[in-house]
Amino acid sequence: MSQKALLLRKVGTPLALGDRPIPQPGQNRLLVKVLVAGLNPHDQRTRDAGLFVTSLPYVLASDLVGEVVTVGRGEHSTKFVVGDHVFGHTFVKDGDANDFNGLQQYALADARFVAKVADTGLADDEASTIPVIVLAGFIALFSSSGLGLPPPFSPAAGSFDFAATTLLVVGGGSNTGRATIELARLAGIGRVIAVAGLHNEAELKARGASHVIDRHTADALEQVRAITGDDLIYAIDTVNTGQEQELGVAALSNSKRGTLITLRRADGEFDPDRIGTKTAGYERRLVMGISPVHPEVTVGFWREVPAWLKDGKIKPSNYKVVKGLDADAINEALDSYRDGKVEKTNVHPWE
Image 1 (cartoon, one colour):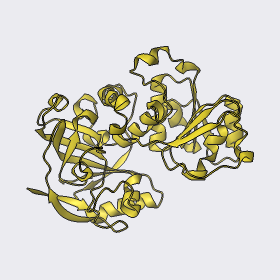
Image 2 (tube, rainbow, N blue to C red; image 1 turned 180 degrees about the vertical axis):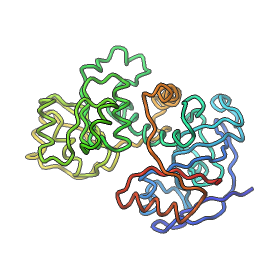
Image 3 (cartoon, helix red, strand yellow; image 1 turned 45 degrees about the vertical axis):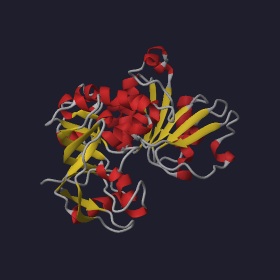
Image 4 (tube, rainbow, N blue to C red; image 1 turned 120 degrees about the vertical axis):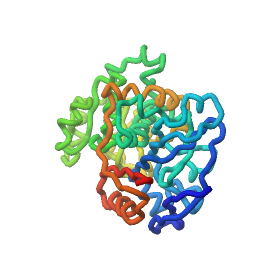
């Protein structure tokens, strides 16, 4: 049996409507009718530069909400029944990524890395804004590839002094920046400094930021250091690439080994005169917010996140809706990401 899908047939060209087979679920897999396929900025880079493309033609959209239509075998799959609405992240380590991504009528889901929408108190469209955005911040904070802080649900969290911890979030006004701030508050981090546009100040403080520094000011580094002194060892940059990550590195302690986690590429070297002496060294590394790469923390995330959402500890992002697999409208939405507009777009393949 075949289904309708939007396909990337050649990198650098627009998506086009086509057909592909309906996959069948194996071990710990679910087959879902795609209710919402959520687009993110990386989808534009996939279309235009081949980011994440494993084979062509390729299906985009790694935020997914679907209605379970077939339950595969396995202990994780049996937690779900036909008719459940589930939300999750579509990236997989094993299997054809095209079978899992969202811009099609049916897709597979890894039952380890989805949760039930009904447990969140959210609508389907709201739930679709959670996976990529929130998971990226969670992995940056709590995975061993990220800052390595103890996840809030772990035994180690009880003995970690979160209250005495300071976190810098560069790009605090981005969707992932907001989620990272909320996760930091959820964990109990005592001081969260956000670098963001000042029009976001009230919202970011409501979400958990203790300080908001104007991203446009020329003395942002001096303002961070006035708060942290030479003690900052934890920083996350959610928006910048390469040498644009200078502020996050410069803000790290010059005498203690600090870490900047980035969500975009971390290439290029910095002028020591601009970032400080860093006598103990520092780390700057990219992390990928992908559930199967970090199962030691992400299985727990998908277990706990419905309650965090229901309790209002994590909030969904704003979004707009595209009805149907409308190639023109969806390519236009991807173009808007390319042009610097960051409005989250949800696609309803069946409308």
